[in-house]
Length: 84
Image 1 (cartoon, rainbow, N blue to C red):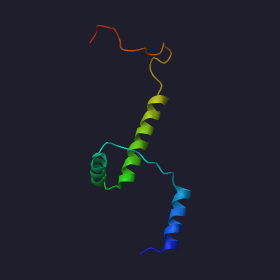
Image 2 (cartoon, rainbow, N blue to C red):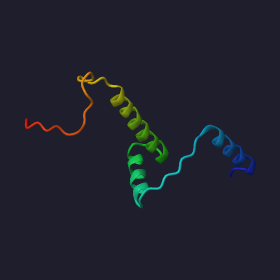
Image 3 (cartoon, helix red, strand yellow):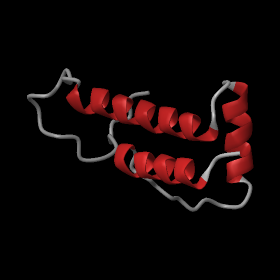
Image 4 (cartoon, one colour):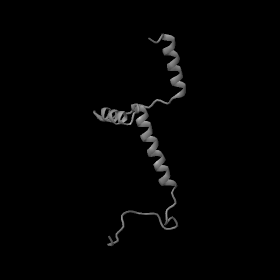
């Protein structure tokens, strides 16, 4: 069993090394995510971080990707073309 000094030291390290984030999700979400994390052999925290970081990297790729018509006017909504 951890001593009070060990617990205090661990808490001090966590406060220094990590940002803490708390989120609220609909009931059942945590259990669903935990099952998905277990399928990937990850903790719930590692699973959530990997998904968020993956989405962040994907978003950066989309933002940074040069488009073929980048010199044209920005897209302003759905096309009205009748072509399929």
